Image (cartoon, one colour):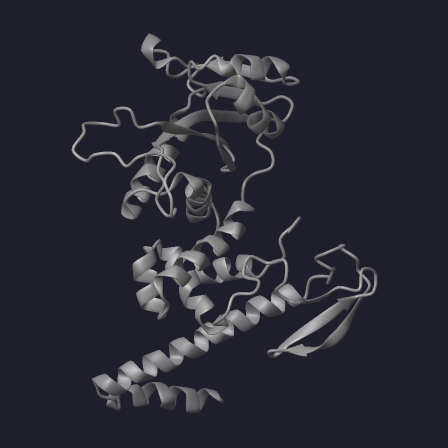
Length: 315
């Protein structure tokens, strides 16, 4: 369409009534969503095609199935399509993926996302945690410079599970009481990189395998008074450890060594989590990853969709 016809089209919107404008808006939204999905799949197709089973690169076309091109690996003879080994593999209703990705970027609840996309609650739950497979890949592999690390604790929850491993508790109690608390390690550096992991407990035996591989030589590790970090820092090559114990009024050292950046991050994460009214412990890692995407990545429908159709490593 040339420039003149385009502006004529825009001027014609002033002549539409409310119902016609609503229909036009829905029509435009449909085309925009289809265009976003088309571009995301095109970007994925531009990457070198490898077999998701054996990672072989000798791949040939192998017909069509449900409108999708299939391929065959000449090494292992397995067939696959463009979306195999992605977070959204084998999911239906592709025309609704963009709308759901937009719901994730806005942090909508399961029910709100289901209503907006025209899907049922079970499908909304499945799609959310499929997209989270992409979010989990955004965890920083290494941290450097000044690194802050600490544990956060959330009440154990069996939300989202069919069966509980303990008797139900009575309502009306104060505080957490005897409710077990689940620790999660959060570590970040001053470059905006973050990594986290749900732990069994806060002992050095459990924290060390999660934190030690993240620290690069020469890093300065800032923690609270948990003695588990002392051993971890001693075993690291060239790791300097700064213990900042609040009870001893030792929160900042030399104006730069502190864990206030981490405390701020955790505070924002807890505030963001309130909208979900508690999450199951089995899915806690997904919500840590979701928040990481919200604060670090381009948190848009386009970025969520691009991540959803990107081939995952070791899938």
